[in-house]
Image (cartoon, rainbow, N blue to C red; front, side):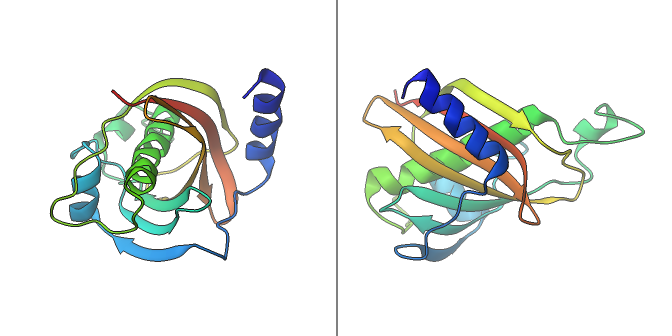
Length: 177
């Protein structure tokens, strides 16, 4: 993906909701126990609450992440006007991206007892933007679409959505060790 394509994608992510395709999208309902089988993150840093939709053909996923109002980070960010840090939003998008990588790399929409976490390290945030502040108690919808992927690297576009409005977006690069 060249610089002009990334800039065009960034502008699109800022203003246009990524849509889950009707055709090929599978409704799923995976909670924390299942998610723990496919990504390595654990509490208090496991940020994905549920996986709700997966489309293997279009390589797109939808997950939720509940922003815990009692999270201690709000004591300092900011005491009188708490707002969820952008870096945590990006981390949530990255964790959703690893969930997507699990499904696409295994060509399945199932999680079973033998499922293994995807080994992936997000190495670069090509673009990120924040349109609105995420507040304690917000329920985030996170959509991630794989743009490029092989056994070595991946590139993903992501959005954080609340009430059908884009709150943040990013283009993330992942390395698969």
